[in-house]
Image (cartoon, rainbow, N blue to C red; front, top):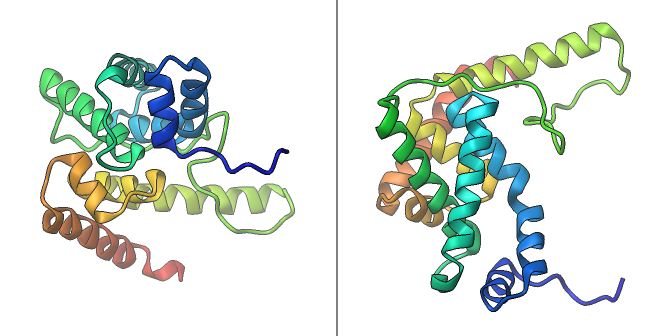
Length: 193
C-alpha cells in the first residue's frame, strides 16, 4: 500500500469524465453491490433488476461529460437510479405495488447480517433465516416511499438531505418518510429486542 488515501467518489467521476477509464472501474466496484440491492429490492426480480441496473450505469456513463460536483456522488447516482425506477414504474403501472424483498444473498454481501451463534447447526441457520424473513417482511410492509427512504439511508448511507435530493422531495418530506419507516419497523419488530 502506498499510504495515499483513496480518492473521493467525486474526484473519481471527474477523472472518468476527463477520460480515465480506471476511475469508472473504481466507482463501479464501490457502488455496484449496494446499487444492485437497491434496485432488486424495488422490483423483486433478478432479471429485471439486472436490466435496470445496467441501464442506470449506462446513464452514468452517458452523463459523464455533464457531471458537476454539486452533491455527493452517491446522491447523484441514487438520483439517477430513483428516476430510472420511477420511469419503469410509470411505464408498467406498478408504482403503488408492494414488491417482496428477496432474502437470498448476492455474490458480494448478504442483504442483512444478523448476529447469531457462530455455529452452523441447522437449528441456528433456521433461526437466522426466520429472523431475516421477519425483518424483510417488516420492510415489505412499509409503503414504497418509506421503504425507499429507509433503503437509501441503510444501503447508500445517504443523509436526509441526500435522500430528499435523490427522490426529488423536500427535506421535511424525506425526514418524515424516514421517521415513519423507522417507527413502523420498531413497532413491528419490538418483540425482537
